[in-house]
Image (cartoon, rainbow, N blue to C red):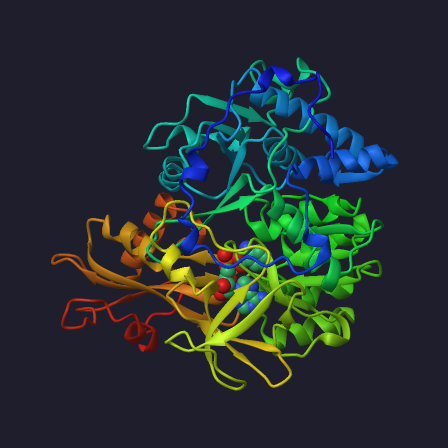
Length: 551
Ligand code: 3UK
């Protein structure tokens, strides 16, 4: 791999070990297994040296790397953008190795370049979803002790409004023209080449935040090595990626499903990634046709909505479609296959595991099952006491492999890791042939249209409304979205349950937290079901019939 050279030795010597000090103690880590020869990486490893520099050095500089709405970058052009941004980070911004950089932007070539630049500079990327509001951003920024922000110009308001105050070091990109003081303006003043930081393979480069059931997001920490690992597992052994592939899809780069599928996996094989924002089922189909995309990544609900529209488009180049984020209903698999002739590749991944660890493709697919452990991973089903159960018994899904859960300073590490196994919080069942079948979440996470939504976070928000006395938020099954958020509300005296009240509460939530978390269904109750010790009984809310129809 590339060693540091005279280009940027001026940045040597500073190292911020905040993140590594927040790693859980070794006894709380999952067991990590590197059974496959391709997963034995050198001790010093910079993932962007491998994913971008190696492609250029190997003669692939003129190949297309990234296609955006308005720009197409070759590998050489991507390398130059990444290198200039890395210089901005370490030079004008004055960041040290190991500093955390919060990233905020929709799927766009510049967002991709920024993430890669943070990895390459030896800093730590903290990508955030474009829809997050100031309060949610602040939680992330405080937990990860963020040192700087790179933000799409159109999304800066929520950063400016962060209750914790925004970090002093912030640069915006993507405004019309390269405004003075913008990231682009600074990039133009920097050298075109940046030698990748000489990082250790087990140096943290990414903190991926997940919404927790308590509403406090968990930061999952991943190493330079892990970025390579996910590229060399599922895409290699299940998906079967080729240099000629053109990747497309919807998951945000701030979600590790999108980061892998729409950026890292294509780069690993010298393929091209189409990065588009604000895709709808119609515009995604249009873009698949226009760009001749061969591999698509999105959530089940998107495929469900695309299936009836697929006939309008020429999808003849499309070869593989990957579904993840929530369970793939059989009806969705069937309608997609009828519409396109493609057998869906279902895969379960998790932010803690970084990417997909159980999946199936081609003639390995067994409808109704997610699949089998991706080579390199092992899985089993554990009972409540942590003992493995045999085929046909529903229990807790447990996995181990080359990646695994390491939360940033979080007590919930003890819940996710048991005897070396990662417990994903899913109830699964195995059959006699070793196929794994999703049954439900074991915890209270609401998964709606591919988004993870923590009920208590919505509750916390609703409770700030003057009319709300008490509330409980659960997921209700929904044909379209998998689940919808349903809020059960006890109003304070003097307030009346009405459609107007429901709408007001919905608007209130949308203004406070990411709008996708708002309760589509609101039910008014006179009291919430509670145990003797005062605990809310969510299962009773879930079982209660909805009396008012969702909006
Ligand atoms: C659920 C699935 C059934 C499951 C993710 C691919 O979803 C991802 O990460 P998250 O941390 O959520 C993890 C949880 O989501 N889930 C995901 N995929 C499936 N359930 N079938 C599936 N195919 O509850 C899991 O524990 O948001 C997915 C790649 C990277 C990811 N981060």
